[in-house]
Image (cartoon, rainbow, N blue to C red):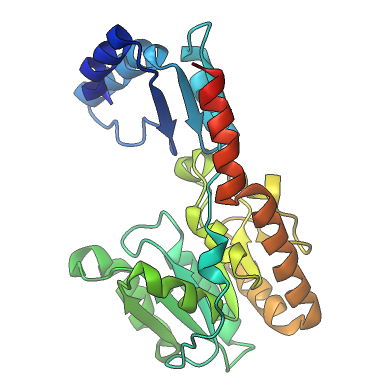
Length: 284
């Protein structure tokens, strides 16, 4: 962010409005003295020079407010999703049987893949039909080692599939064909400030979603109404809620449809684009 200063100076001199977007806390990678010094400089001297800021969560808005100048405004712009990508339900994925799907990072615990695997182990004690499909790049063997070890040690490893990286135009079919979509994100600083873009894609399918109640998920979703929300870190309960989503039948389907309505209301890119346009115009 410090590198933006020369561009901001030119923009100010020429009267060009400049805006800043943040989707997570800026201090997440500030681990040494130099990085912390750069963070301080960024907050005190870079942030006030933008005409406006838009962030993905209310938590981020509260974080940045003390550093804004008097004329600056900040806007909360949640993640956006293109619903048209998920309207075609004709493409089938037949390789994995019935499956619970996760898509995202396979290298860290940011999205709770280790928790999801452990929850799936509990789920399998009462269900022998539905598999787990982990969608994401796993080509870096060293980075993938921890998750691979958890899979190899699972008594149900024959029911856990990893796709590796897939093309973005293939993703809608993989998510549309899932019986459940799952995200066991832990309650960490990243979750408090960020908002998972994959959640919007999950909801857009109309399939039931089982997620941990972290960050601002519950600002938009209600447990048992538009999603299955589980306290973070409770892998046994998460496994039980996966079972509920499988066994609830028509109720589960209704929850999926209600979640889709919520996403259409809050995360539709067309609606959000209009809000952003008005925000940008109001700052000029």
